Amino acid sequence: MAHLPKPPRVVRKIRSAARTFLAHEATSGIILMAAAALALIVANSPLAETYFHALHFATGPVLAPAIGPMTVHLWINDGLMAIFFLFVGLEIKREIVDGRLSSPERRRLPVIAAAAGMIVPALVFLAIAGGNPAYRSGWAIPAATDIAFAIGVLALLGARASPALKLFLATVAIVDDCGAVAIIAVAYTSQLDLIALAGAVGVVLLLLALKQRRVMAIWPYLVGFVALWWLVLLSGVHATVAGVVTAALIPVTKSPGLPEAAESPLHQLEHALSPWVAFGIVPLFAFANAGVSFAGISPAVALDPLVLGITGGLFLGKQAGIFGGVALAERLGIASRPAGMTWMQLYGVALLAGIGFTMSLFIGGLAFPGNAALQDEVKIGVLAGSTLAAIAGYAVLRLSPTKVRDA
Image (cartoon, rainbow, N blue to C red):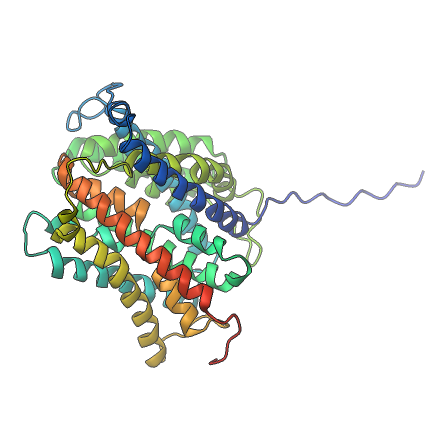
């Protein structure tokens, strides 16, 4: 009896992580803007008292004596944002192992642009606000870029925002995230609980052993992530760092040029988390952190060095750092701007990178813990700088020729 030919093997694919990322970030950015606007409206409405009371409602339990009972705000900033940083860590690892940062040549320009785009805003902040010792710990606030918000503004440009613009902005922001995580871990850690830290190291070694043995199931890594999060929270290092560390230890299956490996734990987890982070965690963080009541705040606060330092760092420092970094790299022959991108478009993207928002607000909370007055000034500076950067970046890109004339 003749054997029938075997049916062709069905290769299960999942959608490209890069395409999913850009699509989600564009929509999430628009939702993020709406969440921030809603927070400002509620914080200055008759619902303001209910809004602030709900955020500081103590739910318990006491997970770390240093921070006391868990509140709604702590669950969002220390809990849900750890999942956000897990997602960011997955995104960073994917790009380094299997994406746009997978070779020294590809990494060179984004690293230069991101490094300059973090150093110059910090220097601008210190030049304006550094004279007051009470403000100096806020130096890193304008160094961050909110990728969702920035790509959301690009989405408003429609076809005028080419894929090259989106990919360059996303890549620079990913490298920027690496720097932000390092800053949080190093600059905003005070006293350490060495026993808890030793326990955290033990969990990391266990996760590393799972990775070395090529354990491809996701659940052991997630269990390890929860344990690591609690131990890091106890240790005094900010708990969100646990997300990035866990992400670095999750296995990834390479698929050069087509990141659709269905059996890759990293890709599976990134795709699973993406909608929850984009449409849930990030907008919720914005709603919980962007609300600032203007009652009792005089217009003169806009001229306070802390507000000016953050606004100037985001709006002036970011554009100068990124545009100047790329221009210098090209002048020295180290790297060149992306093919098909005019200098005017590059300038527009550099402006959009000044939208700090989520990461800037997050770092602001770490820089001035327990000081509600300074945290309100941080919010005003971040909102002002991010709004200026968004409007100016949109205008420049809207007026930019879509065809390259100076290449």
